[in-house]
Length: 217
Image (cartoon, rainbow, N blue to C red; front, top):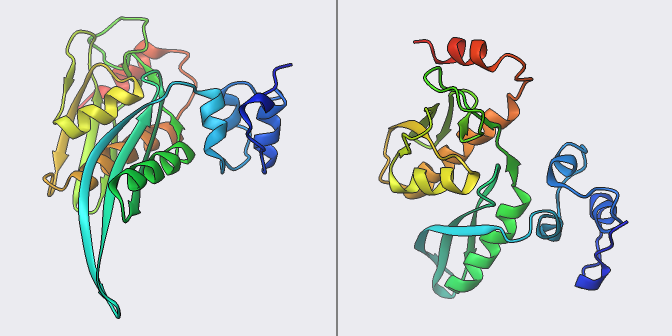
């Protein structure tokens, strides 16, 4: 049985203790346990070596009784490029601290993205795209992600592409509507699309037939 006491982490939640004691040793089991994910160290242990991408940094000013106060808002996505992705925003007086806050929160928002070969044009057995089309919204922005055959790549803007890459999506068509110049909403809408796909997972016993039904116009 593995034990993570050497890291100096002292878990304070039931899920954390189960991970530390080796009762749960993979992220999928942790997410399906029904227990809340409240400690970023859980993700550090189960998904070591996560990549993070700072998608946007914005200075936010507001007036208080003591004068003008400046904070930085950072938008961050984290992922292992193999089916797991998290997203968050963090605010602090310092840019570095705001980034670290966002990374910690993004780990708590981690989801598993159902990957496969969902395009009727593709017969690859490798999980390189989504299993079905999905959409997500944030503010005025709506993003649709559509499974694509292997070799197409990501037909997406930079922000959308960064999020999809961190999730391990290598091939997809995307459509964006609304004020897509707002990076924070574009990134969040993309993450919400992946989260919607995650929440609608179902058995993939007949991928060819299902893919044809899903992608029909």
